[in-house]
Length: 220
Image (cartoon, rainbow, N blue to C red; front, top):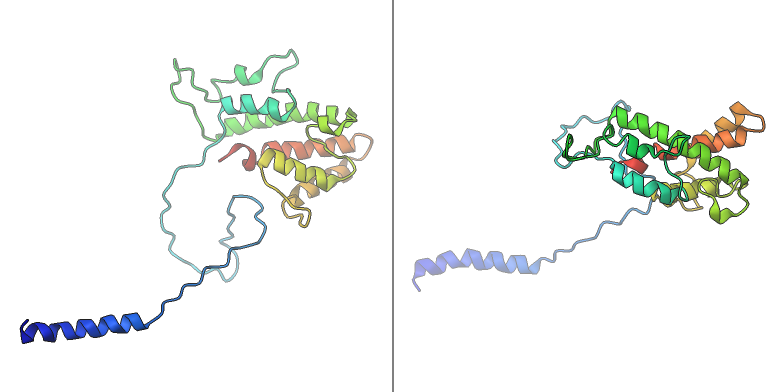
């Protein structure tokens, strides 16, 4: 080995020994133990003291909604065999299949999964149809295990937690009301404004409408 090569190796060896002498320690970030209300992110760009930052483009798929086939299968399981139908018993999922974007492979070859205004209009109709019948049946049902929406008329918060878990797969522990706060406010407001013997029924129907038309139910 020549003298020139030895001279070149000395700085490299010194750097190597210096690196070995340093101990690199990593600390894991503490996971957040806070309650997650839902999977939707909310921002307030007009909030005071907002720091302006350059928004980088986001890459990924667009949001989708449940298909008609999924709703047709899922709704009877959630409502004890009941489905979206008219007064004659005709299945409205089948009647409006093409309008709501279900592929028939003749005129439409791919299923539409966009949450359009037309889709939301029919979701409102479906919620009204199902909730009116389900709540009326629940209020007359003495067996709690057979109720679809109103699990417990006396314990409002318990029923709201049940609805969030059943329809949105979001567990709200008894130690917090963050996940049911808006539904409870809706129930109380309708109960106060309507009054009369039918106020309880109207309040539960309004809660049922809100649950079925929420993005947590139909979008992913």
